[in-house]
Every structure is written in structure tokens, then in C-alpha cells.
Length: 91
Image 1 (spheres, one colour):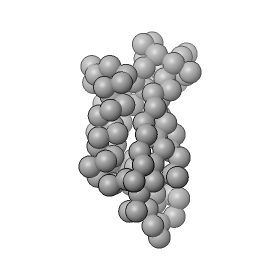
Image 2 (cartoon, rainbow, N blue to C red):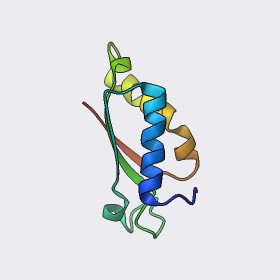
Image 3 (cartoon, rainbow, N blue to C red):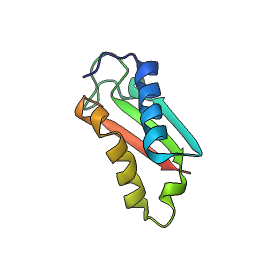
Image 4 (cartoon, rainbow, N blue to C red):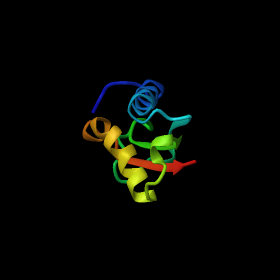
């Protein structure tokens, strides 16, 4: 897993989403501390569980599943590095 701190990791994820999906709104929140002791937690209370709130014109005409797939595809590198869960809210 990346050695970035919580805020830096969330910022890197937000930057990636901005680059890939050109959102009009994007927010990435690290909710890992609320998942301490759950599957995927790494014992540091950060860097494993995130919430993404996003609105993008690229979502127009796509189903909710397809919208979520676009988000997951944009963040695949982070998932591969140990992000365990991403809750997505399409605005």
C-alpha cells in the first residue's frame, strides 16, 4: 500500500478523479477510522475506506452501475495499492 498519509491519499484520489472524469463537484473523504477492526482495515485508521461524492457531465446517459464503474476505473491504481472500500455518491 502507498505510504501517503490520509489527507494526501484522499487528495491524490480526488486529483485522479478530476483528471479522468472532469467533475463539476468532487469530494473524497477518508472514513477509515469508522471501520477500525473491519475487513480491510490496516490498523492505522486511515487509507483503506473512502467516500467519493461526485458529479460529472461524463455520467450523463449512463446507468448508476456504469457511473460507478467509471469511478472505480479511474481509481483502480489506488485499489491495487490497498484501498479496500470506496462508497460512491453520484450527485
